[in-house]
Image (tube, rainbow over all chains, first blue to last red; front, side, top):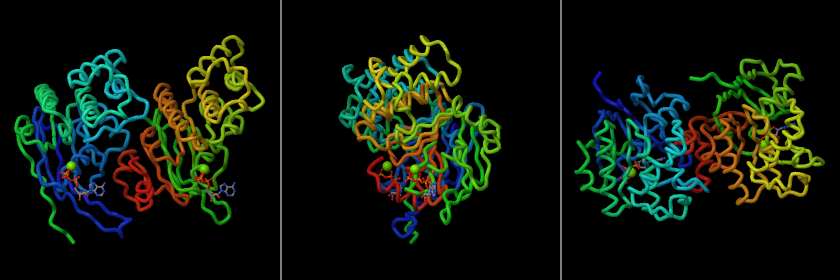
Length: 233
Length: 252
Ligand SMILES: Nc1ncnc2c1ncn2[C@@H]1O[C@H](COP(=O)(O)OP(=O)(O)OP(=O)(O)O)[C@@H](O)[C@H]1O
Ligand SMILES: Nc1ncnc2c1ncn2[C@@H]1O[C@H](COP(=O)(O)OP(=O)(O)OP(=O)(O)O)[C@@H](O)[C@H]1O
Ligand SMILES: [Mg+2]
Ligand SMILES: [Mg+2]
């Protein structure tokens, strides 16, 4: 069976736009991808090819049209494509992390609490979760005076660093990263490279989209091509 | 996986020619927050009323922790309403006793489940006023002197003081100013997480559903047309009506 952490088999995804006369947009057809613990796979392909769509399918954010998404969750292997919502939540809590391109701010919740939340959801005590959150925020050069403020008014780069801290706070066995360094300066890019290398060293399986080729070359073990589907119309 | 706290199957209810519920099924698990969204008149309030036993369906079954809710004697259902369930109405005036002080509104629910010690009841009422961000100095005011947002927070305190397992909320932020809504949503979010409540919340506010709910049901014309994990339904809606609903809000 191999030692993979995540394995997508024959994944397909179309969007049907009912408000545009029911037009069907095929994005993924028959995609199969396997990632092992300690490995980082970079999704490559032109803009609009479906890289983010694939990643969102792997997170269960988009439903898979066909195929399976097998993930090792605790001692079990489960198919995320058909798992019920409660199981998907459990997988996201314990096994599968996702750093989106943009932080979704929660009104009135401070940066530290946003970062600590995934740990607290696992039952880590508030003090320990908050301490870990502060460490990560400091490592990502977010000044201490911002830690307790809600990030709604923060800059794009500051928000993205909070998003990254949140994604790395809990040590997920599988981590998805959609352009994690896009709005960061060179110094913070180095910090993120360090975080990814540490995650690989502890055995995490990573799938990333990196437009920054320097970052990609540093951390990706291999590329996985996401090819645009030929016009089906 | 856990067994559902509440489970309903095949619910039907007609008002004349209108099918308010047309073969609706739903389940709610312990600690789960489920949002019901959908256009006006789609049957959302009717569903809450049927599930909580306030209204009888024409057909279908509702069970709560294995008990048949529809077959339950009225007294047993009322007891559940006092102890294990809570109902937060859109209009706080429907959920509060307007002639009774704020402290009395909270204390009354405690006394209904057997609390007798005046000092303890008052202490608990003080605690809950603080939790819902009402100055305990207002304890002896009647709710009519409160703003709409304060009345709604008081209603929430009255409902939650007895630690229900399952709370029904019908548009709890509906009649309030936008800024007051946001504050109330934060409060609900924090309380629900702290107390581990199961909540069935009807809302028009897609952003609120995204913030609060683990799972969403989309209703239209008495039917559940789509349901699932909140972010999946909102980001990858399948049904034409859900696509319309999601496209009509900005970046929810
Ligand atoms: N929720 C959605 N509904 C409809 N179409 C969508 C949705 N999400 C993505 N698409 C479509 O799927 C296609 C692939 O988009 P995707 O965002 O996956 O590309 P990408 O490879 O990540 O591109 P980029 O490099 O520009 O980020 C596009 O045609 C896009 O419009
Ligand atoms: N007691 C009643 N007598 C007659 N018709 C009723 C009654 N209650 C509800 N209805 C009808 O049943 C349908 C569903 O009503 P319901 O109140 O459940 O809608 P809703 O989804 O809560 O709408 P809204 O978002 O406007 O509150 C509507 O057509 C309504 O007019
Ligand atoms: Mg993309
Ligand atoms: Mg209603």
